[in-house]
Structure formats: structure tokens, C-alpha cells
Length: 400
Image (cartoon, rainbow, N blue to C red):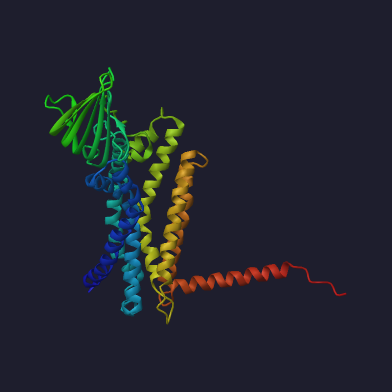
């Protein structure tokens, strides 16, 4: 019976968890789609560039989507049990809230290992990969950056303009190019398409044009010569492409082991140590918070008596989002040194963890009552008490 119950709860949690994980990650990626399309239009990136940028951004958003998916999985699964009165039947059979916590905690344990791998190792590498991709696009995939619709010098006295660009500026469409010699003679090219590639010697580079026309202009004699061509190579005298920096210039590009070594090294500069500690505590909090989200989800999933309100789901999401923002704010305070990194992170983590634990204790001790109703009653009585204190401390008006 216990195994059947665990499988049933696991099945109820899996679908909303997976759906929330996928949908939230996709929505967060859509926020950056405008920037990615700008890479295609202005920087000459192709479809492969967009996919590579999405792959680099996915781990950064996955660290937020994992706890959100776990919370939604617990909320929706136990809300369904409560609305269909299956939760009451389980409690009537002697199954406690602590026993019902087994499957959500197993999910939290598995997702914590996944989160540890993402924030500890995958995300730092993806952040560095994304920065390198932007650097390559800004400087051209091969040291060349051809902007669509603009005249771009390509070393020496070669100027190229293209109507469309693909593959990081390597494939061009609607090409117009000019070369100018030292004596003033100019060669003008127009071609249907062109490619930037290595020359046959494998060392220098050329702009290979296809299906176009060539016009040679000599200002001294005033003579012009025009001809057509099927393929024509323009030699390019390009400087070597700039090299990208090494990984590890900031804490977002460091793995957990690198952060721990940097924070423990006695010779580390104070500012770098603060950044390393702030990043280390923030990532530890991202993993540890997963074990408190099931407490929050089970507590808020049960609607008030004789009600099917979904207020608990909304409150659960709001509480987690607010906590996440405070956690990020604490990390920034740790960066600047205004507050010790450990204290800044603990100031958001400990109150939220205590809030989740208190709500779960209310559910476990009063299984027949929704924590929302109990909490609302406590808040209402608190306001009544506060009002009474304020009225009692106000002096009575004197009789005239």
C-alpha cells in the first residue's frame, strides 16, 4: 500500500514538474530572443549561431526553472489530492503529512544533484562560452566583421558591402566591392554572392566572388574596362584575429571548486575573496532551498474548507520569487562588501526556510485545517490585538 501511494504521488508530481520546467525555461529564453535575432541581422550570425547562443543561455535559466518546477509539481499534485478529497482519505487511513513528504523529498534530492551540477560546473562554462560567442561575432568569426548594408574595409584597400550575410559574415549575397591601388587605379566589383575563405595556399585569405562584373577605372588615362566573370578572388591582407581572454575573470565563470580555492587562499585580494564567497554561498543556497520547497508546497496546496481556491498556488510562487530576488540582492551586497557575504545570503535564506517549516508544522499539527486559514486567522487576531494596544495607549478625551 505504501509503495502504491508513493508511485501515485510521484506520477501526479511528474507532469506539472516537467511542464513547468520546460515552459519556464522557454519563456525565460524568449526574453533574450530579441538580442539573438539582432546577432543574426546586424552581426552576420546564422542559424547555428542562434542555436549556440540558446544552448549557452539555457543553463543560466535552468537553475531558476528547476526549483520553480519542483514547487509547482508539489503544489498542483497535492492540490488535486485535496480538492478530490483523496488527501483527507489518506489522513483518515493514518498517513501523516510527514509520510506524504517522502516522495517530494526524493524529488528534491535528485533535483538538488542536478542543480549542483548546473550551477557548479555547467553554468560557469556556458557563461564563458556565451561571452566568447559575443566576442567572436563583434570581431568577426575569422577576424572579419561585415555588417549588412555598410561599407566594411577588409585590410589593405579593399572595401566590401553586402545586402545579406550568413555564417558569421563568411557567405555574402548582393556583393559590391572596390580595391584601390597606390597610383589611384580602382577596380569595382559587383557579384551575386561571395565567400570569405582561405586561399589555396592555406595561409592567406581571399574574398571569392561568383557571377558578377568587374570594372577597371584608371583616373590618369580616363579609360574604363568592363568584363564579366564566373568566379574571381580578391586577396585580403587581414590582421590576425584578436584572442579572447581566458576563463575566470569574474566569479560567474568559476566552478565551485575554483571558488572554494579562491576564497580559502590567504593571498587572495579582499575584493576577489568577497566575490568568490558571495558566489559560493549563493550557489549553496540554490541547492539547499530545494529541500524546503516541498514543505511550502504541501502547506499551501490545501485550499480552505469548502473552497477550491487556487490562492495557495499563487502565494507559493510569489513567496519563492520574492525569496529569489532577495537572494540575488544579498549576493550583490556581498560583492560590494557592504555586508559580509555569508550574512547577506543567510538574511534571505533562513527566514524563508523558517517560514516554510512553520507552515508545514501547522499542516502536520492541524491536518484538518488549511494553513492559509490558520495563518489568516493569526494575522487577523494580531491586527485586532495591535488595534487594542493602540486604543488603550491613546489617552481618553477630557470632558469639557
